[in-house]
Image 1 (spheres, rainbow, N blue to C red):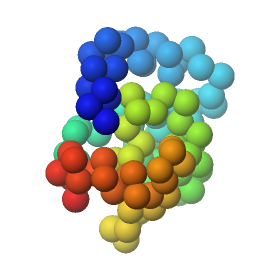
Image 2 (image 1 turned 180 degrees about the vertical axis):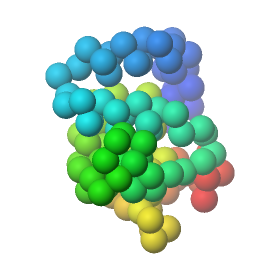
Image 3 (image 1 turned 120 degrees about the vertical axis):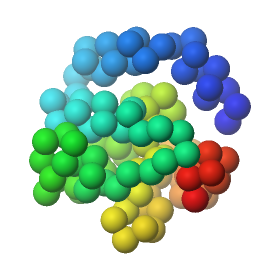
Length: 110
């Protein structure tokens, strides 16, 4: 966990954005990851909000799918995206939902 900050420091924001742009992801998926990258530590956004920022407010499930395949986690903090009803939602990284909750508690987002 503590290594996340170190990883982000080693790989700066510009480098992460470059990796996203150069990836083979769809344009929508790239926009989802960029929107998620902009969520500050200690804050959350909903899948619907992320979909809207990515240019398609009705594509919240597709946003969730894109985040479920996030190849840049934890640098792109998909754990900060929750459901519109306030529930945590899924987390595809090792540890699943329990880890997502733990990360959000560490960041004091929940």
